Image (cartoon, rainbow, N blue to C red):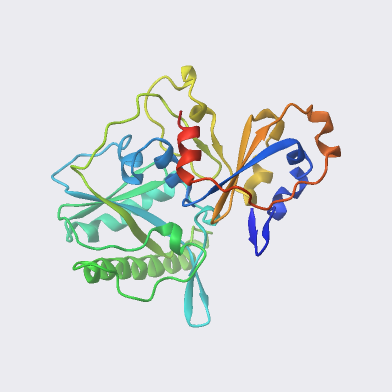
Length: 301
């Protein structure tokens, strides 16, 4: 959904489905999450780091801290740098592995190591660093922060990110001139969601397999086919890519539409599907907004 001053309007890519939504009952909730990884972490009662680390294959080697490392594309807008939204960045498992091979030689001197779990990246550190960069969800789609990173080690993190940015810029142009290939033009990495390696909560008892259209989220090991949890059938789709992953709305008992501030939960009603297109057009105006914790507890039951 796209927010308006008096309510919301559907994303242009969802207009074709708007008449189907007429037959759904709408519940409204406040929203605090933007990234697919944040949704899975909340639904499984884990941190984003734990969500990736729980199925990652790596050697501990005395690492004390882990960070989510989000690759981003940047565009120069006048004298500022804009960060493209995560789901618009072309990024695959092979890209993640190649980036680890490229950056780990320089990260080794910092006592750090970059690992990949599918498309997701974690930066491991042998030292516990005091730095608090904002979450990637706060900067995607907006300008790259031009202020120092908070914390005693904020300057060190900022230097490392700058060195990575310069290396990726030089490498991309070198490959483009030599191979004439279209490579993912990754501008840099953003670190967020830090966690000490000793701060691990217990893993969920149920097997989960949450599907995301642009990145396959890490799934807990187990017999996913036999899972009866509603989370095992959850799909996270972005409107911009809906044409690549067509779905039948009437196949779902519940649909969530999210904006930066609200979540609209559409629940199937008793009205037959064939009548949905003939019902009054749904108005996307939040009413009786419930706490965000309510939707999370409902979905994770």
